[in-house]
Amino acid sequence: MQRVPSPIRGLTQPERVEISSRRLVEAAAELIVEKGWEATTAAEIGRRAGYSRAMVHARYGSKDAILDAFFLHDYVKQLSPDADPDATGLQEAVGHFDRVRRLFCEDQAFLRAMFVATFEGVKSTSPLRERVQRWLQRGVDKVEAGLRRGLDDGSVRDDVDINRATGDLSAAIFGAAYLWTLLGDGYDLDRELAYVRDRFIREYGSTR
Figure (cartoon, helix red, strand yellow):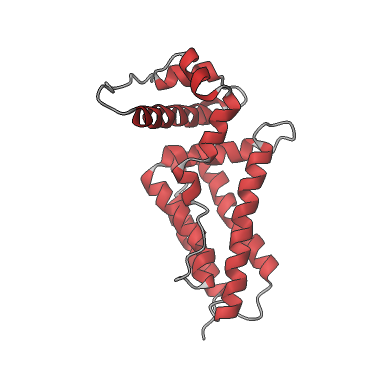
């Protein structure tokens, strides 16, 4: 469904830019889910957001710049924040489950777009590939850092294989994400992530 921009008289130029940028990223997210990034054009994104092709070109210059804005969206940043100095290492590691669950409750459409973009990046020729790889690697590195900090603060068992545990957590999240993306409402992502989170704490958490 095409959006019609609301009146913006009285807004400052930075406010107008922020609103139009948000609409374009949201439109891109919808189209990623519907047809994938490669099959989507900048003109389609503009029409879906309610803007002209000329405006989209003037604001971003290229479709890839819209993709960069998508990966800089606040939701994407929230999934891989800086470490919380007040959290234990184990809490920091399992916090990735909590953040995905929170976004699932707040904006399932955008979360689905993120996962679709992630899985589209598996193609060696995909323009998404390098961005997705960088994004995923940041997440994996932060999980590993949390677990290693957990060894130091005692929240993670001292006999845990950190590489194995990091792979376990990463595979669990994206395995659940794939099933939910494919099956939709037939797969309860929130319930499954909660279950795996609890298992992770039982298997890797220290009882000290």
